[in-house]
Amino acid sequence: MKTSFVLPDDLVPSQRSPKAPAAGGAVRAHNPMCFGCGEDAPTGLQLKAVAGEGVNLTARMQVEARFEGGPGVIHGGILSTAFDEAMGLAQWMVGAIAVTAHLEIDFAKPIPIGSELRIEAECIGEVRRKLYTRAVAYLGDDTEPVGAAHALFIKIKPLEHYKDSFAASSAADFYADKVARRERSGGA
Image (cartoon, rainbow, N blue to C red; front, side):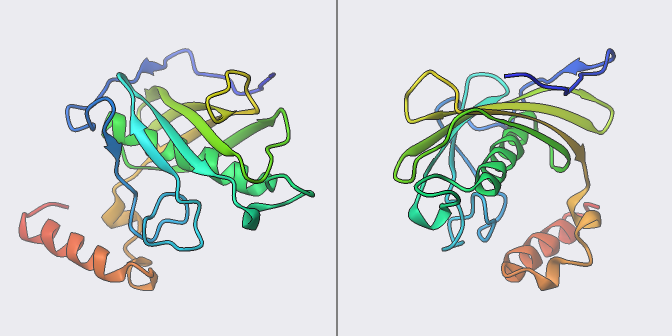
């Protein structure tokens, strides 16, 4: 697979955060209603991730009939979302919270409905607030890639970044509790 994604010369390799889940441990959802990883998002992807040894993880999801695009295969937008989500979850491994700025995908093979999609994602490195990631998708435990992605994320301060949208979230109570705890602890 070919990519036009270029890493900067001043890239600093990502380092595992001491707060990252232990290797083999579950990587927590962004929020309970997150379309990609939220356990309370009934129409979401239900992507589940497990921490790797370094700044990487393995995410898995079932390719259900509701994700169909072409006859019998996953919709490209769903695969794009799965890649974005897996690389977004990989940020927990370096202790970052960031939003997608650029996402580049190479679709290599059709992914059949009824299969299991496995995505191996990792944080490559950082330059100031920029976080560079990559991911490769496979069917189940196969070793031949069905797609690959690269993304650039920008680190944020979530209470500032989302301050105007917390109340509109279907997880508003979840966020109100987080904001209240942060304010009580004197955090920004």
